[in-house]
Length: 342
Image 1 (cartoon, rainbow, N blue to C red):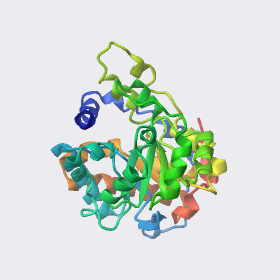
Image 2 (cartoon, helix red, strand yellow):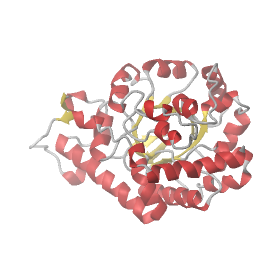
Image 3 (tube, helix red, strand yellow):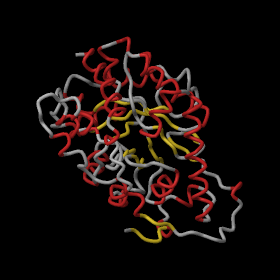
Image 4 (tube, rainbow, N blue to C red):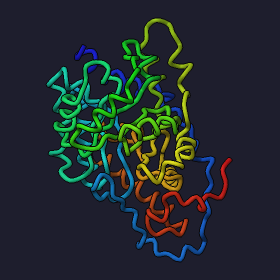
């Protein structure tokens, strides 16, 4: 089983490389227009995009979202480049699912990233459904400890598991088990979807169990349903049928508005640039997660990842300047900055 999981990580990367349409490129944020200020009454150099997350200061609200992990040189290289760039630029990094390292100790090396990122935010990652398949606090704490993580994603992926040839589909009672981990884990639990979005009902269920951080991870970006389609050999097109299933990220943020004073929201799924990040913060996000734009640079070098981060920061700061907003606190949930939506 552990070899199968490890091989699956590489198959996922190859599917993304071979099929550009795994990135659904929804461009849902393009429907949101913002109010331009020709007189911003602000010096561009004075714009401060810094934020605090999980008790640490970040240079701007960027999270390099979960991608991969496992016993393979390509995976180790990708994760090291991401970690080094995250540290250099002062942004957060979440790793891919750490399930593989529990049964395959050699895979742990791809998650030993604190040596490359000694001070920035690192977030571990375990599939929530695995709490119904033998995982518990011991495995979750091990995921945190090997990474030196500041928090742990428990990711929710019912569509991916339903489409995956070897998927784990027993989600019964998962909310209660998430609560057990929340009460025992040494760091905060963050609840995350993987590209279909969290509904207000999902947030309510997680909140009742002690979760205070939610990554909405809506549609519009990478479709894991389509990726899993490429791994099937039974002629089924179910992965294609559901490739766009779920809540677009801007809609998920809008529907989560009643929760924004009680929880921290991360916007991910279909964000492509600093302007999408600015719109996400305006809609209430505390952090913005991007993955797909970093995969190719991460396979190349740390410097290539840094260049991508710097591009996003420049775009984000420029958007703040053109809105006449000097800091992120003034940007977050400031819906008066929205001109219209189509």
